[in-house]
Amino acid sequence: MLFRASAVALACVLRASPAAADPLHRGGVVASAYPEASRAALEMLDRGGNAVDAAVAAAFAAGVVGPYHNGIGGGGFALVYLAGARTTLALDFREVAPAGASRDMYVREGQVVGQLATDGALSVAVPAATQGYLALLARAGTLPPETVLAPALRLARGGFQVTPKYQALARLRVDCLRGSADAARLFLRPGPDGLPAVPALGTVIRQPELARTLERIAREGARAVTAGAVALAIERTVQGAGGILSAEDLARYRVRWREPLRGSYRDHAVVTFPPPTAGGVAVLQVLGMLEQLRPAGLERRGVEDLHLYLEALRRAYVDRARWLGDPDFTALPLERLLSPDHLAELARTIDPKRATPSAALSAGGPSEPPAGRTAAQPAATHTTHLSVLDRAGNAVALTTTLNYAFGSCLVVPGTGILLNDQMDDFAAAPMRPNVYGVVTGEANAIAPGKTPLSSMAPTLVFQKVHPGRVLLAVGSPGGSTIPTTVLQVLINVLDARMDLVRAVGAGRVHEQWLPDQVVVDQQSLEPATRAALEARGHTFRIVDALGDAEAVMEDEETGLRTAASDPRGEGAALGQDGPPAR
Ligand code: DON
Image (cartoon, rainbow, N blue to C red; front, side, top):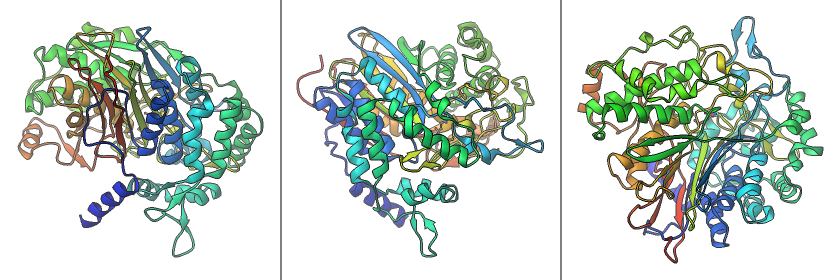
């Protein structure tokens, strides 16, 4: 306990946030998982940039200081609300499978070898974060790339300090990181036995090669990494280590502007991300079921209502497993999945007094996943989210990831680029759990050029009285638990009327059909509540922390803004002051 307290205190010193005591702001607000990234966003806002400039600066900076979560070797999704045009844009810059990928590429002697999809060269999907960030900037930003990339460059050159979170994730991946000479050199330090080991707290991690790559990106645009020497270096590194990613895959990749998913809850419009993430569908399905089951609102932490919430989640994850995948490869029945009739049908199967055993619900395949990875860590947080709202009311919710901690652990020599392991989000075999224990089916089978199904769920909620203004921008890491984190922040604000800081900090509860267990934050449920749910047939697993929500909000009445960075993480919520927002 003492160690934990002192580690947290040290983290505060290392990453002292300039956040003022007053959490209400009149100007722009930002929340991200790293103080350095939040400061980068604020710097852009202070220079007169908009929410997109701020979000892109934060995303590039986040990739430098949070290599265990994200970076230009990864990909993600962004929602952008343009207040003047009253339009929401949705950018999909998620990685896709290389052209050389095949359905059974992780099967050896009839068995899936899961580690091939999470560690090393074969786990790497086509990285797309650079293209994504620059596409956002080109379409809706106002500042030049050199300005927006400047904070990331400074951080890559000057370095950042190792925090408790860095250490925990490096510990998880130390063997994987030792497998790449450049990864070990950059992210580990020699231990007492001479082997690369987890660095001490406060160690400064400098990334001069990455700084040079960022400089080239600022000068040449995305071509700096999708063509020429860097693309060839990526190909050489991956293929030299037994992978399939090619320079041609990088050159061929295109980001996709998608139609956002739209729904509503308690008369607030909710806009979230469509497939190839399953996150937004789950958010809207659960909200839809809950609204039908509890038209007057949910009782926060009431046993009856928690039970309904868990059962609604269980059903949403069955639909996910059965139907969802890359919409560019499979026709998805989205309209039906989100229709009030379908949600009513699902809600009708909920027994208000008893948990439905997961085995009784079928996604059209074997209802229990084959043994092997059911002991996965659905609660780990290796992704990152950032939310920004600017003075003019433009907003960004951006979730980005390398997938598992430190991605594939493969660093491309001379470039500082740490590559993702996003291939693990495919179904290596139908209904086989991935590293988050989540199962998917045929629609998520591996194919060349296809996007693996995600759980990420950047989400915007709009105001009731001023429907052209964003009330809340929110998102989280957490693999399969992402939709549940987003849902609970939203429900805490809209049903329980909690202020944003409390809504983000409150305990969380998660269920994902398989494995058949409820995952809860430590201290999130009173013992009596848990016992009452156990009596209804729910079984529990307690984890340290669920999710790392990063959210910003505008008060409907006053127009004052708040930002909240999850107390489970090491992030920072910052805001501008000055003249009123409206
Ligand atoms: O796209 C996804 O859903 C995953 N690759 C996200 C990974 C993640 O959130 C890791 N944190 N636990």
